[in-house]
Length: 166
Image (cartoon, rainbow, N blue to C red; front, side, top):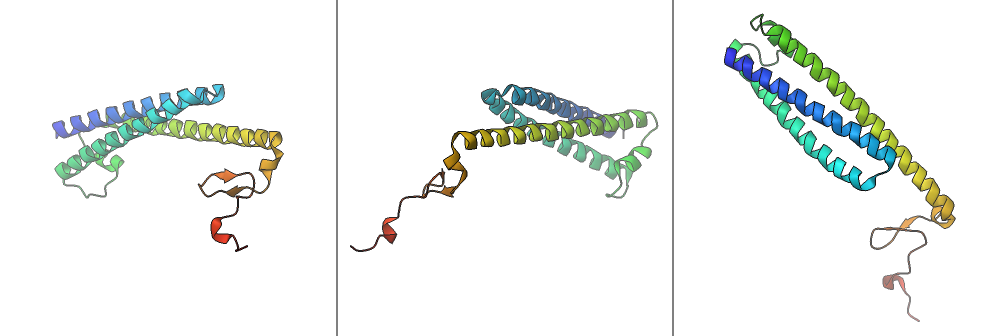
């Protein structure tokens, strides 16, 4: 049992590390949004995407370690993490519970930063749209898509398919 629990602890620590790195990227992202550093923000978004993949791998490893313990315990597959922890040796329970609490707390912080960054980006886009509309009032009306899929500020030229015979 000890090797299984040790592996689960390693997996939880790795998951916590991955979430910590994601949180740091979210904080950096907010600074980049506020500074309007589009080029570095794009690099940050790529790093966030890569980090999310790291978090996913860490979660999968943790879940596999949890399933191995469940099998070793002979417990039902749908047992909760808390129920599983209660069946493990007492010396491991506080550490496992502390790691789970930390992971849940950092996950909530990541979600908060993600919502804040989304809100900031959304407001920035709205502001830019209003600025464009105030500078180019013609762009406000008649927004249609041209033949190439781009928004055209005016009606597209007539198509040769609809030209009548003269």
